[in-house]
Length: 384
Image (cartoon, rainbow, N blue to C red; front, side):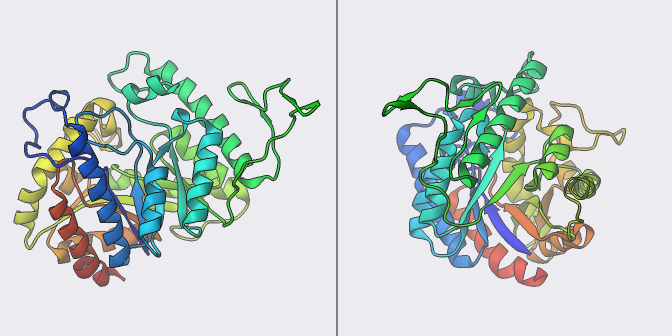
């Protein structure tokens, strides 16, 4: 089982938790934001030293409230590549509609080559309208009255952009003419003729993986048909199992071969380890509640199971106890208890790829460092 580490990458907060302040009442200055960026890089170096397989960054913009302060995981990943030796470096996720697709292809190829083939192309459609619209797209969220139309535009942009990115990365020359993107556009003069094909420079020197977040029924159908990996997070354990198995069914229908157990699927688990379950609950509660204070308005509860056995309504703010005991999305306890819960998922699903989210919004990085050590030294040896 390959195990990676995923951090939101935010600033340390002394007031994290369910109550005040409201997220938008916080504002962190440039020095605190850059200090967090350097600490995130330090955690990547530590993850390499501790033997984790991968380290995942994320892309977010304009978050003055300090939750996620890295706007370009490819750039930060290239810095991390120079400071590490073996760990693979992924983005969870590059928000594809917010990029020019050819710039993303160029930047990823550069990271992948300079790291010696350690880049992982993680892709997603986005979450936050504040980020999406200034960068040229739209996104549907729980508090967005135009969410259906926004999602339709976003999905069309994403699908065409991914076609472009794959052509650019995999072809010596390429062209693409869609509804959204037109490469090269007609009539570009060049040395007495006109440009009809493009060539990406640089191109990847090594094979690469693509992973996409599975967050909706359309993505559950589209991702396996596309042939890349699916990432499952923040869902009731029975929903995970149904979607895990459906992914394999669609993949076999599309590609004519059955997936091995766990192949091309990755599970994300939120964890907190202390000497006892009681101490772990006390340690993680404020961060769990801050997580939901941040993401609840964007509809992230749709992966949870409601009282009627169906997906919970958007806007739900769950308790820690619900996340731990009913949904099983938060794995909290002693090293033995956390190892037992991860092993339960491994046996239930056949996990080959696990991504661990060990740092809640606002956690001090000294705590994150301790969590990484405990995962590597006290939990994972029990599972492998």
